[in-house]
Length: 233
Length: 233
DNA sequence: AGAATCGTGTGTTTTTTAGCATATTATTGC
DNA sequence: GCAATAATATGCTAAAAAACACACGATTCT
Image (cartoon, rainbow over all chains, first blue to last red; front, side, top):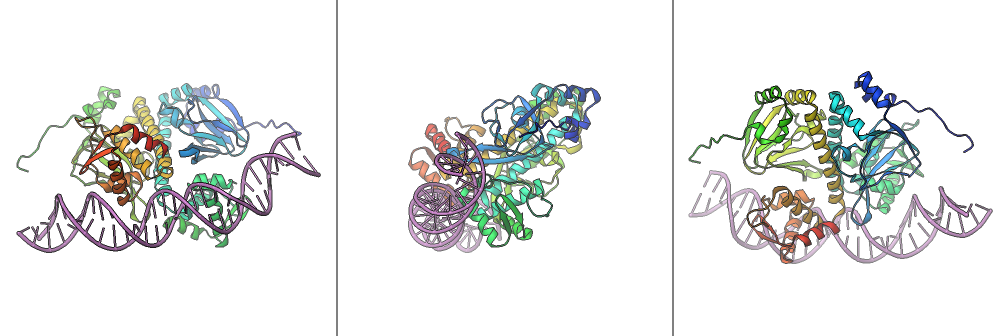
């Protein structure tokens, strides 16, 4: 805590290749009109029910998008990593947020006001096409996830989550440890199960030498087996 | 079967207000480039794994979008009614279909080739914005559905489906009978339960005077109670 | 018309998973 | 450094839902 961190962040056009489709004038307009937001670990970015005002783009850090269901039980519906955008679904649909967002770790975000992003989309068809593609990909993921989460058994759902985390966040130098450390509760909320069952099933996987655990670090030992468990459900 | 039906269908700009955003030239281009498809009851429109070639717009009829999960169990992920479009998600995401589509009843569809709709989107920002909105709305519905389907109990899920069907397809002249007749199996696939449980729970609702049934016709008698059951899960 | 198939309805059993209780170990705050 | 709190772990019980079995009426097919 001694040194005040005052690192220069990547500029907005470095964060995402997306902005390469903008004309010089459009890029200038964007650069004059975004703001930087910083969030601490476990800090809420926005809440369910709020009205969206900005499209958000992660510079560094990780964010979970969750929805509170019956009896306050929370489900993680998406996870966002650097260079990815979020908070645009509700804005584009002209709705209030149906999900909340919370930083997993210290996170830096570029926030682009609603009217700025809308003007850019309406004046740049490549940018519009990007969002159409992005939303279409997300909707496909949501459709697949809904079926997995409802039809697979606990082991299958947890295996799928572990593979998802590995594919999305990558692994550390050892080539096996998943590069994101989730609490058992988050892992449960991502896999549609109770925390107890997440803990229990992780232990079983460890006993079966499919994974190894060290606190929140999870190392995938037998990926084939994990994929098999995910597939058969 | 005696008379050959050769009714003139609504023209494409009558089917959806969407096309009002097109310029006269764009509308002409569209009208020169779509084809009509007809499907019988229970006929497949497209299969999981196929490559999309056309955006589809329902003129008349009803279509279910489903996904086959673990052990061949089918889940209905969306339902489409007249004036609505479908089959565009996979196309825009540049993926093969992750879902299949099947006509509930005799259905007439206008099919717009991929390159035609893409050209129109790229040359008309209002059209692009329409699809951005539409996809955003669908993604919100998918997010909410995933949580409902996983967290609510059988009664809550079935109640939610019945309300969804009423809100989406409306009611008949009596003001209570839902204007779509699904098999018990489809109702089960929509509500993430087995056919037996759909049948059983419908009977329970009928005994509790929340609904009344006559074959596949379902009449909602106590809407407040149904909404309550859906809400508490 | 009769056989076969399909959709519907109902009871019973078994599996899966949530819920709860409780212990133990980390982490955080003062 | 120590108390308070949160996270992890594990066993037991109860509830929910699937699976299975079987009966019956309505359609469809030949």
